Length: 174
Image (cartoon, rainbow, N blue to C red; front, side, top):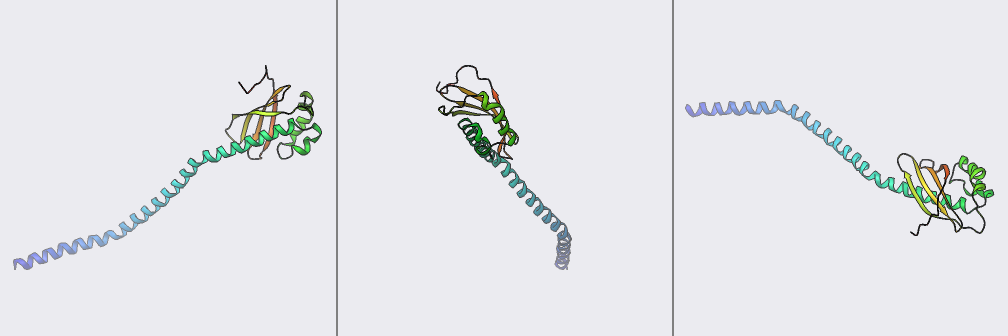
């Protein structure tokens, strides 16, 4: 009799435990769905942070491409006759800059057929935002000329420029 009471008691305890487990299934299902949603969100955040981490490399490529286009722009307008600016600078500079060069810069700087201008220095003044600011020096045997140039990375062209006074001789060999 004592054994049968013990077996009945143990059976009731096990049945109670089983009943409690069955009642917890909906809660466990909700926890599983929440864990899946958290995992999905964590994966999305990881992709986002990988994009943020990799963006300096893409910015570096943008700055490098912009620098070479600015270099090409300065070499083109320094070594071309003023009359060819509208055709030769199209795509490299905005119409405003082309007009300024034609009317203002070219007459004030001696660009002769014999002088060949090199661009030994293209330095970045400001590389934040979509507009990059450059300091450019064009140098020939006779003179050196300095410019500040604003390059718009969205439009991929020079949008503004101004000539600077260059005191003394610029020699990039020192």
